[in-house]
Image: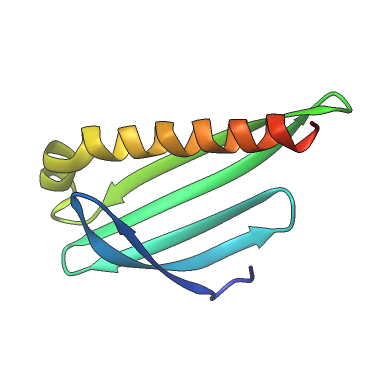
Length: 99
């Protein structure tokens, strides 16, 4: 993954979005952004080392733009469920990697 990479993300209940990687540090973090008229979405994925054998994943998401209050009201809980599911999936993958 490199800055400028483009991904089309399709999730149930949300219109497909074109996400562009805006920053990336291998094995540490990446950020990406999607835009549509009146609405921007940003997400950060950050891996923080905890000791020599563990890490913590931090996920952040935000809406921006004139339609952001409406988007947060209409889709905020759904987005939060997707973020929680993503965190759980990463956790399972990390725990199974050492098996």
